[in-house]
Amino acid sequence: MILILEIIGTIAFAFSGCMVANSKKMDVFGVWVLGIVTAMGGGAVRDVLLGQFPPNMFRNGIYIAVATATVVFWLWNAARRGALSRHHFHQLTFVMDICDSVGLGVFAVVGSQTAIRCGYGDNLFLVIFVGVLTGVGGGLMRDVMANMMPVIFRKRIYASAALAGSVVYVVLLSWIPEVDAILAGIVMVFVIRTMASMRHWDLPVYVLEPEDQEQDR
Image 1 (tube, helix red, strand yellow):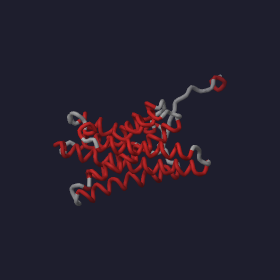
Image 2 (tube, rainbow, N blue to C red; image 1 turned 135 degrees about the vertical axis):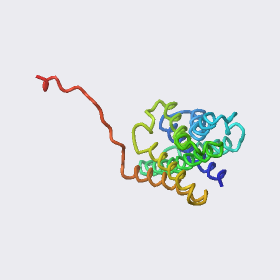
Image 3 (spheres, rainbow, N blue to C red; image 1 turned 90 degrees about the horizontal axis):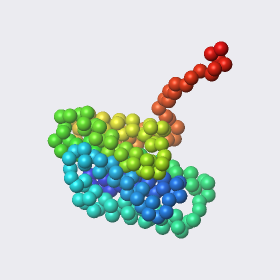
Image 4 (cartoon, rainbow, N blue to C red; image 1 turned 45 degrees about the horizontal axis):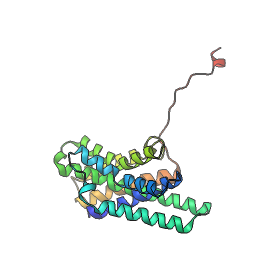
């Protein structure tokens, strides 16, 4: 089941990377790189933190194959369609948000599960931290490479959703079967992210600015 979930997450994040590459008008190589990085960047960082070398993306070729197939499918559709109406483009953006939410939930929970299986189950902070980093790592790398302020720092309750999903998984793991705990964590992330996207929820932003000189007088 874990392999199936990781493949679903890989497809979802690769598609998200393709959308960002499209918004930046990257060439086909740029689309492929951004798709790969988004899909597997978080998992690679997770493996490095947990001392698993080489990272799983290099030991199991199925992930790169799935991400590459997703990118190829995206490029084929983009070349065939050429342009979309504003309405259809907004629909595609909504689909990207859904895919991103699914990928975030899957990798946040799988990241925590991997930390537990590596023998760190007693260190809850590490387990949850690894889960969140696994979920947001690929998107963080994607945004940096695309010269964008990372989404996790600016809108739509992103890292907080991954944190909630990881906590739900870890807490429920002692009470219910592992499969149910995994699904509960993923659903938690998906619901929070989807609601935040639909209702434009953001975390508060507080900025200190100097008062106007006229007011000082």
